[in-house]
Structure formats: C-alpha cells, structure tokens
Image 1 (cartoon, rainbow, N blue to C red):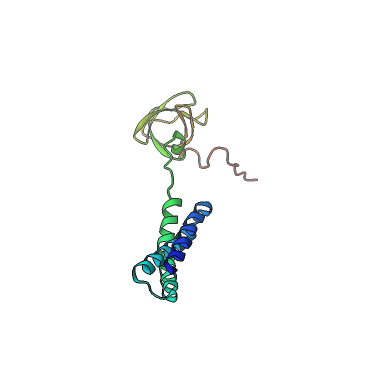
Image 2 (spheres, rainbow, N blue to C red):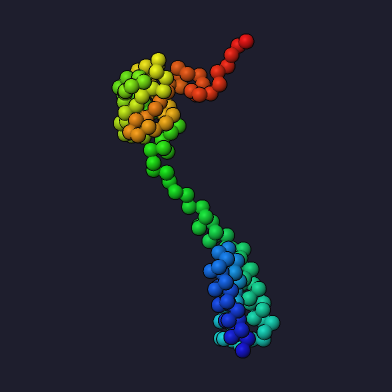
Length: 157
C-alpha cells in the first residue's frame, strides 16, 4: 500500500511540475517514484520509504536540477546579423571617403564610407565599424580621431 501512495504522489508531483517549470517538483517526483519502486520490490516499512524519498530527492535537487537549469537557460543565440559586426576592426582595401570605399571585414569585402565627410582613409589602414547601413559599413579611423564620433569634445578653456 505504501508503494501505491508513493507512486500517486510521484505522478502528482511530476504533473504539477508541468505548471511550475522550476524542476524542483520534478526532482521531488523522482524521489517519490524511486520510493515507490523500492516499496514495490522490497516491501520495507514506511519509514524506510521516507528515507529513500528524502535521500533521492535531496540528491536530485542538489545535483541534477542545477545541471538541467543551466542547460535550459544558458544557451545564447549567436548573433549572425550584420549588426554583430559593429565595433569590429577592418582593413581598408580601397580608399574610403564619405561616399565610397571598400574594406575587408570579418573575411569578406564590404562597401564602406567614412563617418567623417572630410576624412579620407588610405588603403592598408585599420578602421573601426560604427554602423552597418544596408550593405555599407560606416567606419572611422581611430588613429585620426582620438575620440569616437558623437562623444563630447574636450575644450581647453
């Protein structure tokens, strides 16, 4: 009779887990189902089944549950969009001005334009990507500009 009670309790805990999603009830259900299996096979006293439930549930909650939570919550999607290239460095392969140019960015050749209309960037220079505008990378030469464009200028007053 004890095994049947543990079986029902285990199934109810597993069913309740479907509504909670924290894995705690699932681990307790695993402990209860283990106690039911031990009770069905060996027919020990009820207190032994309580001990089996406690030990198994404790082990599941402290070992399996953290692994399950980590596996389900730590998967980050790798950003493959062009916006992921913002902040990257590239090499100029064709002179870049405010209208046109080409850079080698992440192993590919990209159209590029300079963020600063007065600045021309020679081939071979390293530039930083500020934005991706369609199929064109907006870049600036960090050597020519001590600050990122758009940041407040320092005035000696």
